[in-house]
Length: 286
Image (cartoon, rainbow, N blue to C red; front, top):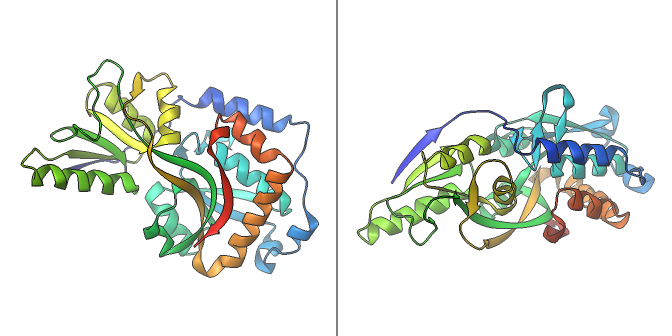
């Protein structure tokens, strides 16, 4: 098995129109977000004194989290966490962080929370607690003009995935299975940026990509000529990351998100991002 790192940082325009529309609708919503005094009273004293909490996000991970220069941050994680922060009478501040450095940033105290459509896995739950808030799965994308490449015929192919995700581990296991069956190994291309990753598949530098179903659906709906190769599999929840020692704060965030669900904002935000079918039960894990 060979992994080719491609550490390029760049934000493409695939999600720009959707992001700006979501921000516009959010800004002009007829139902403004309002603080919940009972929840606000539970905010830890240190955070209350600051008046804000810091969230480590991948600034190149639309439609979950991205940043647009002076126009600030956008994405469904941004909208949901802004609503949660308002319920707590706090400001949410964004700390751009490489995806695979988000959890270390939270563990080291550089941020109180991490967010970027992060799948909840048993491995992650050994180190942090996570607030489940959305359902997703795994998909593969191919060029629209190419013969379908999927998990069943990936041996000997160049398959792309994002660094720091479970999809790298998945491809590593699949490559080992190829070798065990006397078939060519998979060459794994590891990217830091979903836009660069999808562009590499579109131009034929890689044969396919594997990623989170929500990310793949957005990429397939964009301007880059890609198509979904397999039915979504490996259903899982996405979660916001908090330190294990900050369990009470994670519980508070979950309660604030429940309030966002109750006032209808959760449903409106998901609909703006065309994610209404991915609504999940809100809970803290483990």
